[in-house]
Length: 73
Image (tube, rainbow, N blue to C red):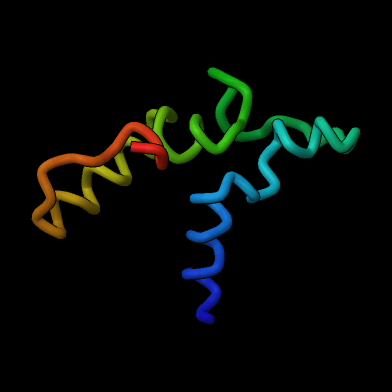
């Protein structure tokens, strides 16, 4: 399985090691990216302003009209 497909599968299953999951495992990592909200799958992939800009540019390039607000929908 290609690496990107595995990472996408992990993201869809909320299994990526984001800061919120690392904190549950008592692994403290300094927050150097977005200070607006706790780093979670939902925030990083759908809510973060940088992610929104990247997805908007990507989907416009691919010809898509929009995207989902989460993996569940």
